[in-house]
Length: 165
Image: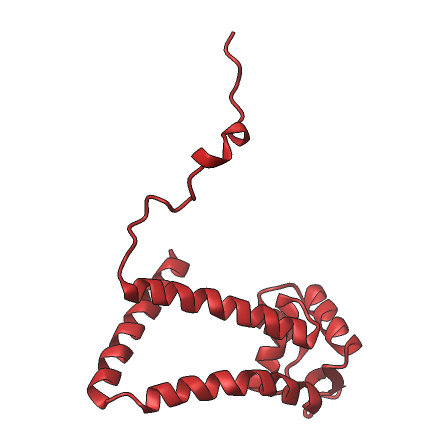
């Protein structure tokens, strides 16, 4: 009887990367992949700086961009249950990034408010990157900027299509 072969028993030298058959692509493709990788690396570093996990960091992003939100609004934006959102808020409150305050219009509700010192710490990390990208954009000739804007718009549409599919 033939023995079942264990795929993990393949010698290291003969293993191929999962995407080995994908075409190498252009330098633009390589740069886009590098941006995606560096973006994820930067997000992990920001999470370490703020001492939060990925979900908590995304919650902080929503709070910094939108201002105070109710826990149910956070759960909707994070696509998690309200119980899970409550746990996120509990963790963020425990490390001092947010506070719970009465809702300004409905006294039965609360809102989650980002603390100014946490927003300032996140901004310290983000502003050099944002400023550098803004300067790179400002340095582009208008016709180059138009081409890049169109290209990035098409890339965004491909991402959206992949997520919708």
